[in-house]
Length: 228
Image (cartoon, rainbow, N blue to C red):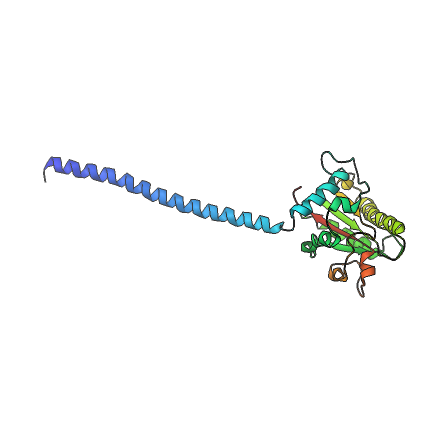
């Protein structure tokens, strides 16, 4: 083989080698990119799955309650204010209750005696346990009710005072000045969003028999980590 032919052969090898290496690197990079994209997709799906209960309707309700309670910028001042439940929810009672069904394993229902607003020891303990289950959330939702026995005005007062009993207990127990800026109260009286007896299967502060009247003498409590 002539010297010229040898030189052309070496030049060809020199050109082919980096081209092949670049192709290999590009292939490896593409594989890594696909793997990273797949991992990111998996993370995104997991994140969405974790807060799948945060529907637009639920977020709207929480935002309205949070605004009236002064928990978000532009709210009605520090602490919570009375709310007209139907106007806040803009949903039927059944639709409102259905929003919270995905929270059945995390929420608790604090039960009260008929015509009473004071907490019993089991109710207080259940509130404390629910409060400790924060999991990074920033909004503690309290929705209180009254059963349909008694007058509507009395039952609105009962449900209001039951919600406030939850807040007062938390403030006394944990003595955190910022606590009331995390707690949103919504009281429904007897006229809106009555619970069916299927809610007796949720985590309750009382065990044993449970009727529809009993489950509505209550306050629903749960941390909500929806981005609002």
